[in-house]
Image (cartoon, rainbow, N blue to C red):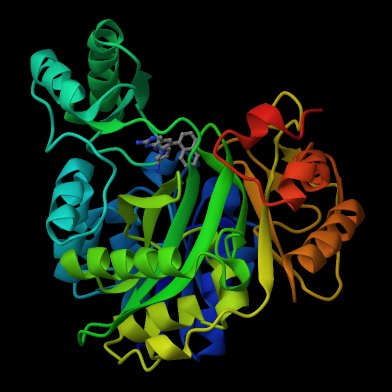
Length: 449
Ligand code: MV4
């Protein structure tokens, strides 16, 4: 194991990675922007280096500034967390070129997954079910119209460099597709600097199911069961859970086996190592691969709490070249867990709500875990993602977790900023939520103010 780890991230995930590393006897280096100098993730680190002003492009996204901080402190490894540089193959390669261990997949695996239409092709050839769609990127409107005839309307146009829904647009007719093709191409170009787009059959109300992957660099790769993240708003996840109600208590066992086999096959096809996630859509009793994410996900705690896997610990051990000693048959479900992302935002209008955390008193109790980037007295600035904490609740059953979650959210005292806690309580009180009737349009129909 390396002796010193630089954490190229901020907030709750930087704090969490730091805690796990120090428990393993690894010294930690925090890097921070001017906006974050006094936050817990900086104070708790063994060393901290200022890497720039508040804008992310000049700090958390600056490869030279981060490499310089690693050099200065003698860090041997870099954990990128999620977001920022975590899925940037050039950063992974730059770390490696600087003699640093990048805590993530090999740059070659990242390169194979980067283009989503290419990734679809690769895994489909390996026998993984993918959403019916175009064979690769579509060079012009004509090829898009031809592909759509084969796929059948409605279709969804996606940016090949995208992920997370950026640039996506649906079309129900050829006339609409002509508009949508241009719109999607323009958005792809604006967001990613590359205009390649592809088509998929559009599912009007799918569920989002994803599978945790852990693989070492010695050829051993396992899955860590599934999570469901169907409750989202504008492609921002709001509530995540494990297991999915679709598969809890041995339900739909044949489908869950297909799902896990597909996820492991996809990860092996990419030559994946370290922690990653394979995303699927569930619709009409089937699961379809959509993309693989080359990072630790925000929602990884629900997997940790329901499988006992120490995902960050394994990320570090795998990056240090150790063997993953967990066997697939050792991964078993235990209980249920729900994660509520606490955003600094207006719970009705959804505007960001930065400001001082005059009061910040998290709930406590059995099955309550809080991963927070802030403490009472800290200031939430408008520079970064408005997620300030994750409340993760576990129980022997989903019903027990729901009951504990209601109490925990009611007990959570935050003053000085607005948060989406009222939205979470509305979700928990929606009969469709207790019934496990989830889909990606849940918030359009339920939990209204
Ligand atoms: C889809 C889809 C319907 N059909 N693909 C959005 C994020 C990206 N990772 C995939 N997304 C979707 N892909 C097809 N072929 C609907 C969505 C989608 C969605 C997916 C997961 C969770 C929430 C969502 C909200 C709107 C749309």
